Amino acid sequence: MPFTLRVVFEGVCALVPSETLFRHGRPTETLDQLSVLLPDLRLPDLAYWDRDPRAPSANWRAPHLAFLDVEADCLMADTDAEVQHDWIDPETRRRRLAFYFDQRRLFVEGGTGDPLTVEQARCSGAKPSTLQEERSLWWLPRLSEVAPDSEWFQGSAQQCERGELPGLVGGVFLREGHVATRGFNRNLEDGEIQVWPFGPVARGADGELALPEAGRSSWNRAIANRIVWELTIRDSARLVFVDAADERRSVLLRPPMGSGRAPVEVRVANVEPEVALLGAAPFFGALRELLPDPDFQAFYRFGGDNGSDAATRWAVPLAPGNVQGQNEKPCAPALYSGFSEDGG
Image (tube, rainbow, N blue to C red; front, side, top):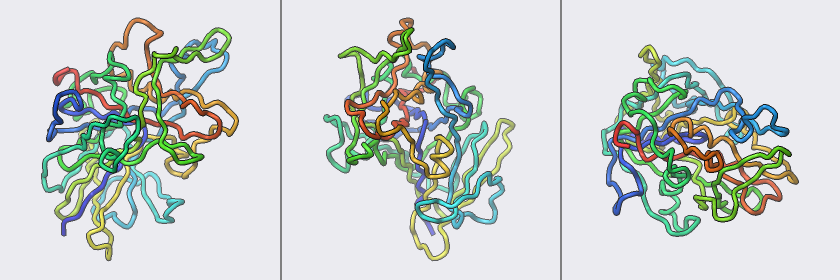
């Protein structure tokens, strides 16, 4: 019996379309492929503005874990991929299983082969005003606006599919179905969608952070922090991991008994382990300034030269004007214009 497979992407994910989105007069109706690439963030790293080891107050990017997360009741016996983590979701109290990305690519087999389409509503305001606007990829930070010198992902789609590009812990390759966004960064106090400026950050000799001068920020919109890919599966979904030696291991999924045609939802995440698997919320402290988020800087290693002027490099999402109280950390994806060797 056909069913819907819903893959939710969250965390530090680079989206690279086969054709540039939101640049031409009318939306591209279909794409040949959308690559969702996972930067390797397994080790802690200094923010670019703190690369000088003498920095008085260094800002570290925490290690991230990249994994596929599925509900245990959906797993079929023919699965031969090794389960790395078995846990209970603190919200649903249901058992879930995690399969780690480790220089592995993920392909989905079993679909009906429908064309790949994406939500592309263009929005005029700083926040979405309708449900259709909320689903648009318009709200994914575009490097063509945030850092134009880095808008093209260096390499080709074929190199990514073969696992030949360094710096990635994995990738998922979308060739059918429908892609939209789901979920925004919100203020934890009142639930309002946040508007995030992006800009370069520097630290002076006194250790104080210098934020961009007025008029030097970009983006200044909401950030969608989850991407949803839905595709129709004929009978069972085989999620195939392929490693650097082209060895295949798969996860076979089907709706649990008695669920009818309910969608099977899985998650691909590249986030801090405590957030991913323990349900812990990021902590900033009620009275502490929310520091600029260095996670976004992981995307610049793939975008080529980002300019010769250090003052204009490495734009990151900055804290909104009201930083009193807790604000959700903007663990943002990034939308590239395409692969440099495929047309950039």
